[in-house]
Image (cartoon, rainbow over all chains, first blue to last red):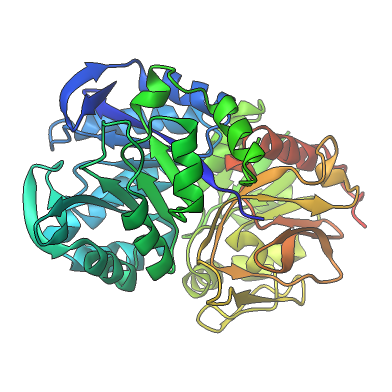
Length: 251
Length: 199
């Protein structure tokens, strides 16, 4: 049986790992390659590296980092942050990324999703969606959560899958950094409506939160950052706990 | 050991090069028939779409070269599917080393089949030192059913071929280069297979 995946996320700034609370107040948390290798040894199923300050000038720093990660890691990893074009995706894949996450650029220009899927295949395209609840329902936010859009999150999810996204990374901005648990209802709506895997992100604080997002939330994978970075939760213990709760995981 | 990775438009050669380097093997990447014929081991990775991959192989003439190779040969992912007779992916005629056909997963499951799944097998040289039930990493939308040459299966939602082998041709639907220690061991086992040892 296909297992549920545990995905540590490493937020990268200038080649170093950071983590913010609600995407602000960044804290330093180590060398990405070293941290990534440690996670892989401890049983992480995949890793996500998000370049949170990606700019054109910093692109080469990121490419060099991706090359180092690819040489070291023996598990799959996704790279995202500031990906704006088919060429950006091509460079990251050529540097050794297994998948590339696209967020704001797809909102600005949805045809980008079709173009990437056509060129490199859906299996390497993760569509990242930052969601926040508003008076009128869950809306898509962009630019690291700073800018609201009018898009309904689930409608956007359906559209990007129709355009060729192979996986959805769904972050609840309302839950991110709170450690009060994942957005279960929202995640379940995505997981039930979409024919592709859904990664839940934002809000993990305890091992039970992971059980809840896999059972009630029906997520295919769950992502967390600071929880793992600061060793508040160890991956082997988490996987044992999931196993004890009858959730199939790789141990 | 002279290990050559087949160069064509659908090969994810970098990941495979890194995995081999971690095993202490410096492989080369080539689409030259002479280089491939002279190799001790040939690895045929694949990520992408079947029909464009086959077009690329036909253009370079490798469609005639690869089936004739006699040293231990390892297809990976799309590289397994392309060794068959046909793929339902854009109705593509493939290399016909094996006579199986790749089918699309049913709509009842999420596609692609992406993530870690348990590998089930009877003892086989490819899996020496690996326990049946070990997890490996898959990413694919098409699958090869269980056929006489199947040497390992995985379930999604029904059993399909996770590995096939006949003569010098071996192929894995999963990615050994991305499957942690289990994958590294399987790759090493392939490198350790002696020419002529195929069944």
